[in-house]
Length: 161
Image (cartoon, rainbow, N blue to C red; front, side, top):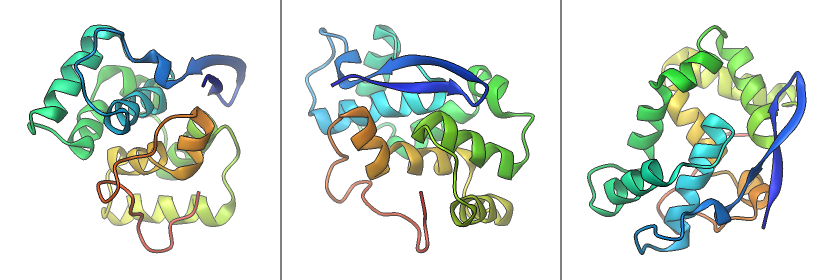
């Protein structure tokens, strides 16, 4: 399934985000994993993964070298991510995630919750973005397979999207 996600709050331009972005020559691994990686790319960079990068991260995951949390933290240190989000305070960051990932304005309770998680240091920006990427709302929005049962189907107490 193909859906469109807004590129930014100030832009009505959209990009395709779908599991069909998985390259045809990707390593054989279940769609719950490949779709999680596709969602992570689209949540971070508002684009589908390129074939080489996608194959690298699938191999990292399937070999046990990195899990989704480690991938997300790595992505959060990338120049591409930092060019989009580095100049924002925590609340602005969370607000832009709501718009770029979920395609809507965050409610005050959700903005407060995630901003407090960041301000307290209990979550990094990478972990917050991963929570949005793997949220049921984003899974439904992208038409992708849900995360593996038991792997990333938890959310912090009080989490709101």
